[in-house]
Picture 1 (cartoon, helix red, strand yellow):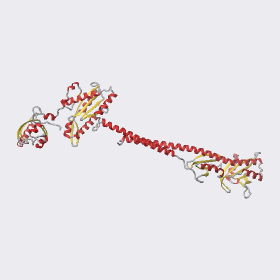
Picture 2 (picture 1 turned 90 degrees about the vertical axis):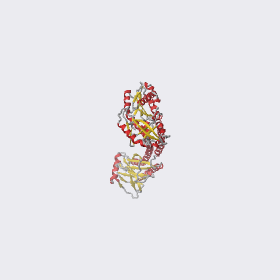
Picture 3 (picture 1 turned 180 degrees about the horizontal axis):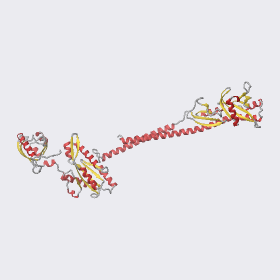
Picture 4 (picture 1 turned 45 degrees about the vertical axis):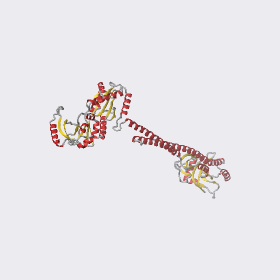
Length: 565
């Protein structure tokens, strides 16, 4: 059984909500995983940045040791003393050590190929940096710069002020890169991180220059986590990122798990909706009339019982209504038209009675309405429901019908729904006995009416008559009814044989020699009709020719009757 449109919409909306929740939760898990990884990476970058700072501090310590030696010698450092001290301070990552009194390099270790002085103050940038070093009176790093026979290095410069307070000059140590921190960066790479080390080159420069990159110089890493530190008045930043990039696999796994769960929930919802829909369908089949869409008898009584139980103090009127001569509608026009008549009546009742009314088809052409209203209001509504003649079109035919009704009140006449149904049913039969197309309010005297009084029909009456009965159309002379006495009078055994013999026509019934005289007499008498039921009787005398060839005289007494059908 497929879901109906409403339940499909519910399932789709629920599925979309599950999808949005799944995506949102998976995104949250992914962000949490990414946040956790970046927190860890930050701590790692911080630890390794401090390790780099310590690496630079090794070089700064050696520069300061040389400065202390110059101060100890009051600025008068012999070549031998300088060489011995430099030899003790040298490490594999140190390129050279220099003394620069007043900014002029006079001693270098290891010795230059040509022993000559170098005036650093002649270089504008170097002079600015040296002035900054003198002003700060602390070790300052400068680089990266290109050093002799070394592609890349950093100079560590420290000012020297003698004990007497006189400024002497500078001690400079050139450090080879990446030798000074190579072990630190290798360890970082071994942990599975790409890195990028940047610095401002000079304390006087704000823009940063790339010093090292695991992906190659000039190539930056994206979406990295970094830690900044200062060493030698330079600002350094170590940025790192996992070699394979940040992992958000938990988000994908969560999304997959949520998707499976969502599918399961949607399937379970669809099963529930389908079960509920099947139950509703069964309830509808059990309680709703398929033809009219109204409550059937079971559904009507169930709903009335529920309403009375919920509001026992509510006044109500219950009415039975039926379509007068419904069997005749079926017989004349066919059962398809009869169904249309029932649907037309159902629609009429839904329009006449307010929405809080309970309307049902309790069987055949019988309808029932429960009106939770004051009696006088309910009575007026019932009267308005049957007023006039109802009409509908079936194909090219216009069909007309009338309605009869019987009704009773609660609690003034009945103390329970069941008793109310019985009393309203009695009132309806009283309306039928009264001549139909009327509405009857229950009265205790109606209990004297016997149902058997309504059991007679035209067939019962016509078959029991002590003479021949014939009904035919005045315009076409088509025979509509003949009783058994008349059929046997013509020596026929059945109605079908009789209709075949007479060709279903009054003309076929009259002896040919008498037919013209009979028609003339009939027309003359019809013209003379006065409308007085006691006088308007047609008398015709003629002969008939039976099927076995006998000619018999007959006398007939008839009436000319106007009929809707």
